[in-house]
Amino acid sequence: ADQSQDNSTDPTGGATARSVLVTGGSRGIGRAIAERFAAAGHRVATTSRSGEAPAGVLGVRCDITDAGQVEAAFTQIEEAHGPVEVLVANAGITKDTLVLRMTDEDWQQVIDTNLTGSFRVAKRAVRPMIRGRFGRIIFISSVVGLLGSAGQVNYAASKAGLLGMARSLAREVGSRGITANVIAPGFIETDMTAELADDLVAGYKKQIPLGRLGATEDVTAAVEFLAGDAAGYITGAQIPVDGGLGMGH
Ligand code: NDP
Image 1: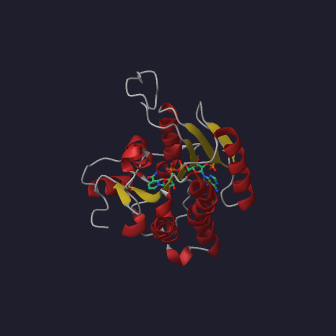
Image 2: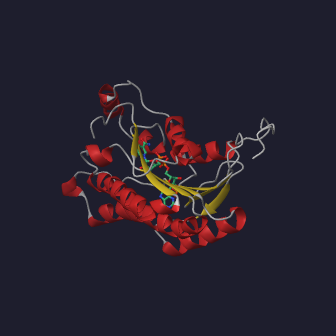
Image 3: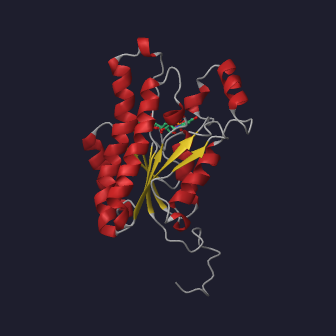
């Protein structure tokens, strides 16, 4: 690039503008991530079953538990933005209950969305990334994946599984310039956590060294870093964004 060029009007600050896909971008953490990438000048798409994408972002209706819908969404995104270069596998759900009350369906729905859904989108994204010899895959896990959480046997298993998947992928495709990493947020204020009882939230706060719940911006900063040029030598890593809640895990 021409170093003398004035990049002040270029929102990427001279960095390469990428085709970015954030799954589950209609609300919460995914929406904030999509907004951040769009503001930085990238071509951003999001998928969700309902809801709208933020302004300036291509919103695609897609249930990640349906392989056909995933394929159709990627085709649409590739036509609009080119092959996905940065994939943020963020879509996720909870179906919390103690193990003795957990039905096979509670288990299956959470695993199928959080773990298998992430596998579906990562698998679909990888081939064009190999062809392009560049890719950044970022899985949004959770502190409870490694810490465990009473009432979340299904959710914790799905999130722990993402780490094994990321590390295996990192080994498979590292030689092609593709990184695969995990972000493990702690307690972030979104719709997902708004349902929790006040006394439970107060109890969590006491266990967080930084003494506050996280904001979606805390997570987007880490995602942006992993997707950026500066993180090209980081793969198979898990970055906690949890105020210290999960230290040692
Ligand atoms: P929200 O419930 O606010 O948003 C979840 C997003 O995922 C929505 O856009 C939702 O859209 C989408 N989604 C859910 N299921 C599907 C599906 N089958 N197919 C496509 N999209 C789907 O959650 P958060 O923003 O709080 O969480 C985002 C991620 O971060 C999740 O993976 C969560 O486990 C993780 N996380 C959250 C933490 C928190 O404290 N909030 C802590 C640690 C991790 P729609 O319903 O329209 O499909």
